[in-house]
Length: 453
Image (cartoon, rainbow, N blue to C red; front, side):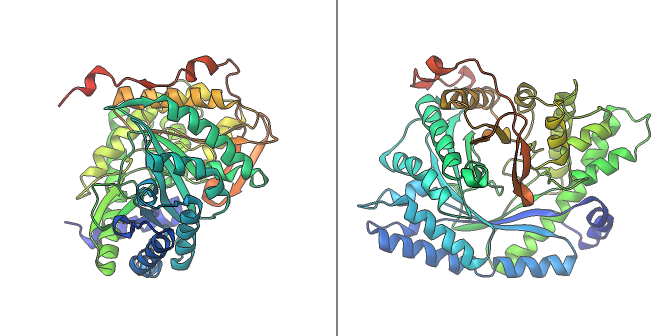
């Protein structure tokens, strides 16, 4: 049980170290919206979202005021739209995306996720149509986010879809090049995607989820850093891990309280807490800063992967004790553009692409919000995606790629988005060709440990 009085000790965390509830995300099934008629489908989608989410922002703001705990984002995640649009006689996925966008604007949320497809074993007609529509859909909407699952530990890696998505990422960036390719910043590809993730751009309402549920994503890297910095120099690794667990428990208790209160006000089930430490570009709110507090000169130094592994594990161990249900991604994010310390490390050359890939083997997600030169070939992007999918498939963990080819820019330049998306230096990628390999197509088979039923 959560004792509300325990929340009092978090006040200094909020005031001094950027503790917040990063997101409350309403997961909403659209399966009963399906129709052969695109007009009826879009009407059903709009009406259902505006009905269920009409008070989401209002009630979240009220709770934030009542408890003096910032709730930064209010979001919606819907059933993967490839399923929802497939029954239409004349499906128009761009129109569906615009409907989602209009509904999101009406209820006041900042993002709606679920313009998605699950294609780890292959694509249906609806999957293909949705994938082809992604660049236009993201260019013509403001709040819609898209995700595609390309691989799993059970199914292997769909290399046809990997190659196709590399082209879609390029096109999404190209159509929004006047905004530094923000279309690609709203698009992520996954291995082992979770169906209850509250964080964008990968959020959608999973097929095993209820009619609706409220999922919460917590944060607090600044709080963790401050706690570690307060330890004596004599503190060993076990001391660091125990302190992280202690802080993760307190952070998660906050999320559990807010999630249960908000779900009760909305009269919908409480879903999961995502324990992930999600950084922001704000000074002092950086996962990279935690590495420095641990004793590394900067993110990217030898030892960074080990530090991240310990951080990820300790966050889960501490947070799970304060949660009734844990889900989503749960760990530590390392998005380059959204973390002031990661940005600094990349700008100074401390953190290169290969080191980032190594870190994804132990982090919460994967290669996240990384800007690369706009002339990077689609084949090379496909190789980057395939590598990341392989890490997830073999290690039975969620991995992802959210990469932004910045048209007209080269290594050393920057892209600027503002807000939580921040800014990112353009990182150099390996110039060796992956073309012949990625164009073989087919599926990379699942590993032998997938046969564990």
